[in-house]
Image (cartoon, rainbow, N blue to C red):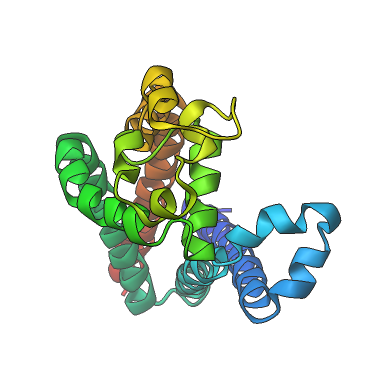
Length: 239
């Protein structure tokens, strides 16, 4: 078996796996989006906890569709030795790679800008929708409970909020869930950190894992581009 044939077979198998994986994600995403109730019933007693994640179906559909497209282009391009499909596959992988690098740079360089952009929007949600809108309240409760945080920056984000005016207390997470009625004095003395700071701390804590996964994905993308270009050039030379 020649080197070209070996690489071609590996390209087909690799992209077939991507295609099948993307199809699976696409199917699950459509199922979650169209019939979330039956999907959640699978988890029985955990259904109520997972209900907030049902909207992830749209994300799964998007990722699945991209993977199906990439798998199709790579698999068919290698099988049919089509320069058009291979260069399209290469271009899409390159665009995704550039977008990931740009996103990483923005995340590292402009983390403070992210706070200034996100802060006013999320604080407005806390002020107007927390305790009034069930979806917003559930998302914030899950975030504050999971990260052990309070508000965007701290408990003062709830000052003059709908929740405080209606219940005359702060969310229990602002007092580490230690009291049934979290007053301003208790929230101030507890000094629970804001969710943005906790999120940054969590990311930094798991930076090695995140970096390793990102490096692995980048290596696969580079390898896919190299193989696609190799096949493209070989086909061109054959012609």
